[in-house]
Length: 201
Image (cartoon, rainbow, N blue to C red; front, top):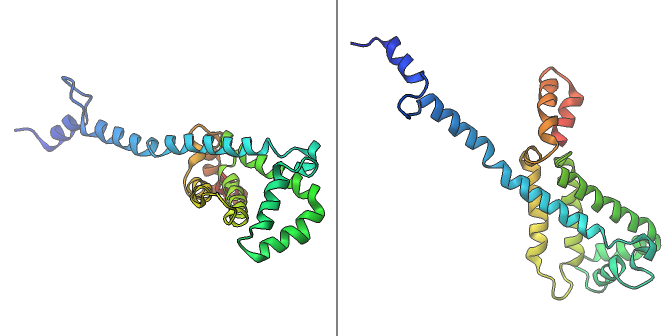
């Protein structure tokens, strides 16, 4: 009659006759739980980042961001003024943005480039996601009432960075996967700076 020790040993030994032990099965299950939720988010993060990178391409400084040609950013801001969703937003565009057009054009270009770079690289993913949420919310408020615009487009524009913010999306196909472990160790050792930076990735 086998002893308890012999039974435990048999359960944890290497697989025999092509059969996997319970410990091996648990290990594989844990691996799938850790990896499966991340790679789709990582891929979505890269594509979403490329969307912002592409959109920054038509913020052209040489055209004064569309003011000379009447296109680009200038055209869409004029559409937001003509079809306002929120009166206060329209007042901001008319009284603040238009008089300081070149400054805000550069701000839009830099912000969208920053969002694109951080999310494509997976570097500072949560920080990039926070900026993307703010920028997407601003665009949504401004353009929601413009004719022929589909509101759900802008709902999704906000939804994706919220998902990236609430998950470790930068740990899949991202630089954050290399930064997070040492930051976790430093934070566990009591470093407040590491704890802050870890939140950003």
